[in-house]
Amino acid sequence: MVKRDSANLVLNVRRDSKQRALQEALLVPWPLLAESAAAFAEWHMFILWVRAITETADQLPEIVRTALQSRCPGFLECQSRERKDHLPLWRSVEDWVAAHCFAKARAEGWFDALMYYAYKDLRTEQAWTSWERTKAAWRHTPPPGWPTSEEWTAEILATRSLVHPGTEEARAVEALGRVEPGRLRNAAADLLESRALALWADCVSKPGQPLKESVLTELRTRRPGLPAASYSDAVWAPPLFSRLVRLGESSWRGTARTEGWYSALRYHVVHHPRYQRLIHYQQRCHDEWSQSRPNLYPSFADWLSAADAYCACRRA
Image (tube, rainbow, N blue to C red):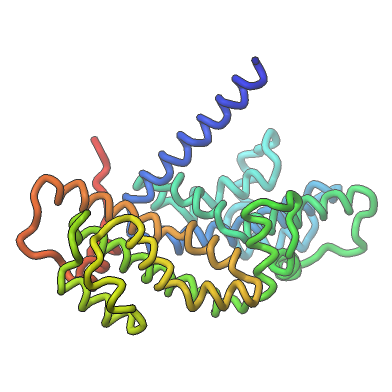
């Protein structure tokens, strides 16, 4: 019973942390959030490089010292003055990076959101796996020479299996080897806009009633293969929403499944800051329009532009 209660407590804490991070994410435009999270993921790979070497070496190797002087100017001098002997060097680097490179996020209250999406970055999963395997290997046999930061990063990006197989992240990482990064980004961007179209249609359509002609026109324009008979007389309901999502994703989904990288595509869409923003904006529209229906609903282009620009105000 005690063990079960402890597990439930941990799950509740994680759930609360996730909700807090997602709420903070609304305080900043999603492109800035995505860019900052990606930057932190890159720093995280560097920090794990520092950690792997300094936890193995007897003293600070020159290769790490040079890298720190280049990437974290003033850090070593500050470290020497303050003599933070109680902290491992890598932890001090992590603190320095957070304070100097992500001060805006901390000051504006969206640092937890940045961290949440940085840890959803598959490179972070790859980095932890690479670090764990390197630590185990070096424990028995230290390398004849330390890898450069660039070599370490290349090894991380080449990682295709995680320590814990079978997870959503592990399947996505394994699939990365079957698709070019640029092609994956393009496919994810297309699927995000496809889902946005379905979310817009849901916002401007009344449940249980046929689709308006303006909505049908928009759908047919953006989905040339849309079967007219399937939508002209259909009433708006969850099955119709799901059908629209599937139709919009069918091309990329079919290609990705055939070529074996659908797990990576789905992961990049579901865990993208833009996707969460679209879902939140859709709910906001439902809440507001349930109280007062607008005289004129926005076009898809206007709705998507507003959704991308949407930010929430911090509560006092």
